Length: 455
Ligand code: G3I
Image (cartoon, rainbow, N blue to C red; front, side, top):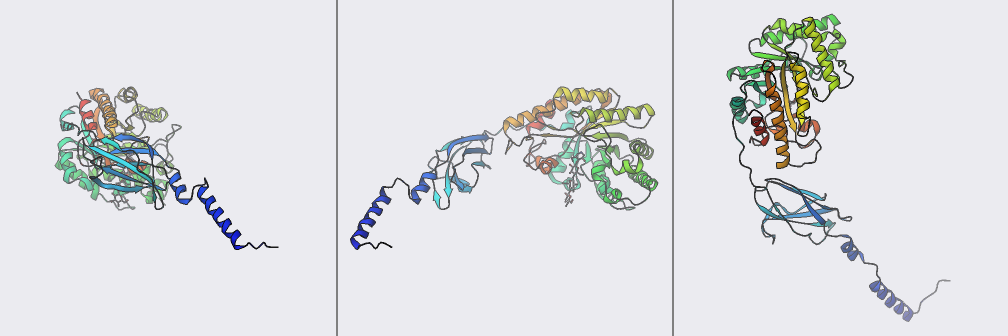
């Protein structure tokens, strides 16, 4: 039976329930939010440079985002755009585009729906003083016993690139436009338009050209990968391509990477490229012989990466070179690409492995130098400390190269001008600053490292 309450009983019940709700130690919704929506704690400045700083704080469990404020005054009446409650979901912020040697005030609050916590404590951060400008001595003026190379592309032969190339480099390499996939895009149809622009630029500016690269598994046009003729026709096609290309630039292209990266990273074995499949293991020596026949005066190189740190691969390549030398197969030099990092490989290992090349009487080319400043992705901007470390590694590389026997000196080539031009950014998909110039064509400490390596 359903009990029916009298009116007086209902009033007593209502008064009781109201008092209970007020006295309950259970917080109501609003106080629940206030209770859960704490302000950010333990703010830590994690990176500072001339124009930026990074701050992290403990994540607030119920916050969905945070609002940061940056001001020139502790009273926050001079906001720095866009940091006026700039909202973001992460418990970290990179504050950028700041003035050097300037104090900034930072605070942050938690956000959940339309609720805001109190602001955090205020942190004062002072950006680093603008560094003294680095010396702008052109590299080629100091590197008197070898040429200083630069990887170029036709889209970067004008403007500030042109001005800097002319000032300090006396050797250029096409970063990608003198490879088979560009120069021989379809069967029987050569396209030397880009190569001509680069070679003509070098000739006009009295620069050497290092041809890169006639044969490379990673820049082979699809029609070659899917060649429908016989193996003999394939070999004839490759011979025609090499002789057509090398003879075209005889007297202008001083040297060629004839075959690039022919060995697997492990096992010391040849990559099973279409060239090896269709021509046999001796495709490499055939290409070197054809190159020599096409231009007896050009210097011909083998080129590969991780030659310093990958002993198995290095020994396999050097064994091939020893065999060439023993049998009179033409080869003049060996390229260590030198895609390295600020923290390795060591100077002593670079020196000892370089000696394995120079002891064979070969020319040595440090052919594609870049120095990752952020291999472990621990930086969101290049700090002064990491710049100094990168500078020291560049200095070590140059010291090693400058110390090899004069008879083995050829060139030290840098794989790009400005940090953002580097292939490494897209390849690794993260921030990095691997070269000698910054995004604004300013000389970096790494450039000074090159100069100091020549002292
Ligand atoms: O800039 C053009 C763009 O305008 C066009 O729309 C697009 C269409 O594909 O191509 C863009 O050019 C790209 C170029 O890099 C510039 O970013 C090419 O596609 C791309 O193939 C080229 O990649 C080059 C790669 O070799 C393949 O040739 C990289 O720049 C170059 O740094 C890299 O260099 C190699 C060495 O030759 C050998 N050692 C390893 C090194 C790094 O992979």
